[in-house]
Image (tube, rainbow over all chains, first blue to last red):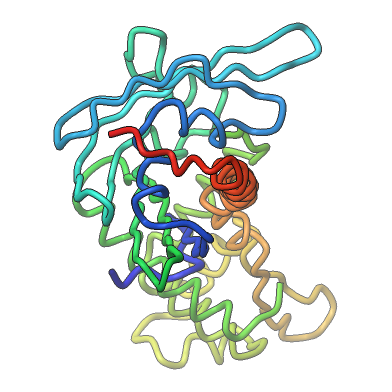
Amino acid sequence: MTETNGSRDSVVIERSFDAPVKLIWQMWTVPEHFAAWYGPNGATIPVAKMDVRVGGSRLVRMDVQAPGGAISMWFTGEYLEVVENERLVFTESIADENGNVLSPSEMGMPEGHPTTTEVRVQLEAVGGRTRMILTHVGIPEGSPGAVGWTMAFGKLTTYVASHVKW
Amino acid sequence: MTVPVAINEDKLSETFAALANGTRRAILARLAAGAATVNELAEPFDMTLPAISKHIKVLERAGLIVRAQHAQYRPCALNAAPLAELSSWAEQYRPIWESRFDRMDDYLHELQHRGRTGERR
C-alpha cells in the first residue's frame, strides 16, 4: 500500500488499539459489534446485514436523531477483499432500504461527489495490540482517463501546496 | 456517514475546466514560485502573447489567479483557495472516522473489562 495522506480522493487514518487483531476484525464483521461504534453520537444502527465474503453484500441502516424526528439512511456495498484478521475491503454507496444505490444529487450532494466510495481496513498485530490503517477512497466516475487526470491534478496540488500557504 | 457539504458547484466546474489544460497548469506552477507579468509567463511557451493572455483570463475567471489593478504590467499572482476547496470531500470524512474510532476504543475497553473478549465465531 502506497497511499498517502492528503490525496484529494482519499483519507488515510492510522490508529492503534489495545486489543488483539481478532477482536478488531470482529468490530468490522460482526453486526452487533459494528453497530456499537459505527454510528455518530446519538445515532443508532438498527440494521447491519453483512455477508462477509468476496462478492458478498452489506446493507446498513443508520438512524440519526434530528429535530423533526429520526432520519433513516441506508448504505449498501460489496465485499471486495476478505482476508480474516488482516484485510477487509468493501464498497459503500448511499441506497434505499432495498439496497438500490441513490445518486448524489438525489441525496442533495454536489455533482462530482463520488457515488461509491471504497473502505479499506488493514490490520496488523503489534505485540498484543493492533495497528489499523483505514483508507477511504472515492471511486472516480467516468472514463479511465478520469483517473489519469485525477493523478495529474493531485501532483499539481501537491506542488502548489508545497509553495503556498493557504 | 456521508455529510453534504456546501460547495459552490458552478465554481467547482469552472475550476476543473480551468485546470484541464497543460499550459494553464504550467502557468499555475510557475506562479506558485511567485508573481509574474504576462510577458514573463509567456516566455517558456511557443505561443503568442494574445494566446497566453487568453489562458490567463480563463484562470482569472476561475479565481485561480488575481491581477494587480493599478501597476503598469498588472502582474499575476496565484490564488490557491479554489484548489483547497477541491480537496474537501475526502477530508470531510476524517473527523467522522476519528470519532468512530474513539467510540470503538471505548467499546473495546468495555468489552475487555467485562472479561468478554467478544469470541463469537
